[in-house]
Amino acid sequence: MTDDAPELRASDADRERVAEILRDALAEGRLDMTEFEERLDRTYQARTYGELAPITRDLPGVSLVKGPEEGRGWAGRVTRGAGSSTWGVAVLSAFQRKGRWTVPERFNSVAFWGGGEIDLREADFAEREVVINCVAVMGGVTVIVPPGVEVVVRGIGVMGGFDHREDGVPGEPGAPRVVVTGFAFWGGVQIERKATRAERQRLKEERRQARQERRQERRQELRERHQQYRDDMYDAHRRMLDDHRDRRRGE
Image (cartoon, rainbow, N blue to C red; front, side, top):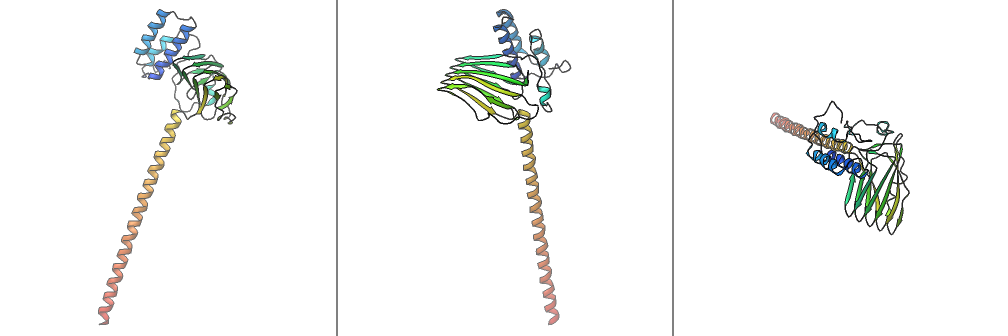
């Protein structure tokens, strides 16, 4: 979020992102329980970015930048700074990292009888190469990467496994590389490649325009066929009249 747009409405994902930052700060000892509960209440009551920004302003490595999604090139997404969240844990529960956040050089995650989702589609990256370390024990972790990002899988599975379908797909020039490593026991780590919301919207708009163009072409074709039919009927009628006049003259 920028200071010149404090009244922009915050989404549920933005509030949840701030809540995750506060949970990390509590676990690291930067906040005590009273401060954590007070800030968490303010987070879920916030309606704008202007109300969210002060909640985490004094916490290190936090960036609540809210900028346009389209036009953000890879150079602008590799920040060479600190990550906004460094770990996620799910024990008989779930965790999620998504939206605009900064992936640190190394992100550690644990899922024990639970599940985690690490969504990098809208994220910035602290370094050109980041490591996502996943430990899945009778649980699962899903890593979602955007098109253009190179993925390297180095995890080990025992009665479990790591998804290698995206391993080795070449990345775009300047795009970060994501190394997925760790250990899976009776669990799994899945890697999915999905388009960003802006890209999905662009493709949806392109499909809509293509359908509209096809409908227009079809309508034009029908109009032309109808006009050709009318012209043919007019010519046939004139020939009938000419034949009739010729017969009358012959009589």
